Image 1 (tube, rainbow, N blue to C red):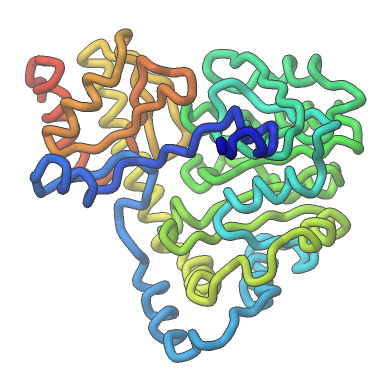
Image 2 (image 1 turned 180 degrees about the vertical axis):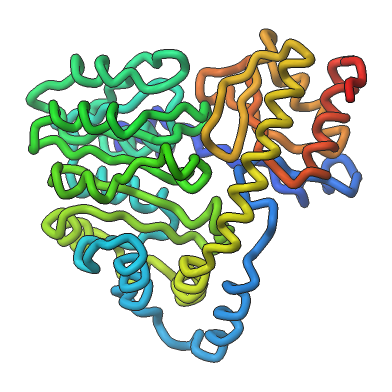
Length: 369
């Protein structure tokens, strides 16, 4: 019996999501140590102390189910961003929410629009529910919003926009997003995926929660895995109009956020010092990456995220493998249709030095100080 024959039709065309290689796996494969991982856009400063203290205080309560409604975290988010608790939906990471949006609003009779080179979870969830995927060719590696508008039909139910985009780092301004939303029918749900918004400059950052007041069909999705350092706990949130939030919470699985994630999220949402430290390191180290690429004539995609994507103008798989043997894990993105590119997460200065040295060795680049 081949069980693929009785699987959901959309699932037949899917491949499992390929995460960044864990350090432990590389240690087992190559028998090396002192490995650095710059593959999964994780927080290089580690787990915030504020979250550790909150978790320690919660440990004796782990025999109890978590608060299914996440009251305290919703209050914290509401106060921080000037929204109402009944606008908030909590998720087991923002990936959980991205899937929740699809299950709530789309079916096999509907169309879902997203960009070429956008987050790979968009096509994954679209195909998994048998919806019709409309992938719009990218413009300069980013979202072509005019192409999105041209693709609209009476069957369009859902649009995904990552801003900044992963894995390319492209960024749309508030004016571009606002003008786009003004042309979208209220019957089409637009998801603004802002998993990397904390890495943008404050003066350019979109006031996306204010846009919710103008566009009731907008959902803003955010993650605490990146700048907040809670990737291992899996926690994210979405803000929308209360009617949409009510629908999402009907579909959301009970207890989808565990107790430790909820309590750590409350702590770190109030830890502005930690988040700003992370963002400042990202800004200064991104300049070093750009300078390194410019000095060595390596083409890169300018990024507003906590990563940079380099085009090697040749298959990147051998370069990726050679870097592994140097103890440096980065991210191949052939699965995104970018076989000549590698995505490198911005680490601490000493980690980035390791990458520069390793890549120079692999590519036989001259040492430039």
